[in-house]
Amino acid sequence: MRWRGFFDSAGAATIVGACVGSLVVTDARAEPETVYFASADGQTQLVGYLFAPQSAGPHPAVVMLHGRAGPYSSNVNEACTLVARNNGSPCNASSLSKRHAAWGIYWADHGYLALLPDSFGPRSKAHGFGRFTHDDPDRDDVNERTVRPLDAEGALKYLQSRKDVASGRIFLQGWSNGASTALNVMYRQASLPSGGFRTAVAFYPGCGPRALIAQDADRIVAGDVLDGDR
Picture 1 (spheres, rainbow, N blue to C red):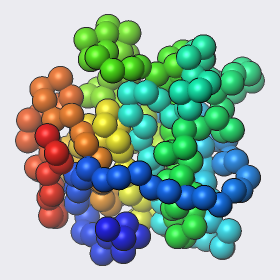
Picture 2 (picture 1 turned 90 degrees about the vertical axis):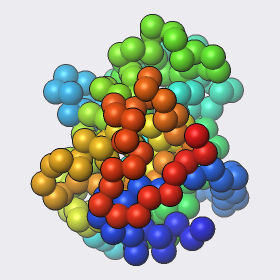
Picture 3 (picture 1 turned 60 degrees about the vertical axis):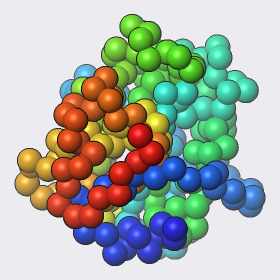
């Protein structure tokens, strides 16, 4: 699928769920810009990584939501805890996972400003979580139902404040835990006035009761729906 064409043609509040192979981007470039902005929870300052097009704006934008492993490479994240302004950490813009870096570069190359928020590092959990950790109580304060949707909404507000962003063309993309977050964001948004994310793409979300705020959250949209793989 040509994602740029999909985003350009998708209607408001569309959700697409998909299971796709890895994106491969081979060109080297400078690391993304590190930015800071508030979560909509009213208490957490988030760190994010901004991939910007080289052309002049305003640009459409994409918020990319990482999965339960977090945004950083597994080669460095084991010892990471807090990621915050003025706090040195090996988890930073130079140590993002290849998947997240590749997608950020892809969107920037196609004229989109891409923002990857870190929901875990600002809450001292930059190490992320491995397989079989669904019942880990340490995940409760970074859960995809009630916490991470507020981070996505904070990222939306931050992008809408930027002069180089087309505020009516901001999209949402998530993987796994981040994909469940994206579905929850769109479910919350369905009852709100216009001005939210225009479209969401959810790659292999968890769709059980522990992942979604409502069991029809992957189906309540104003546009077309293509369900995920589970």
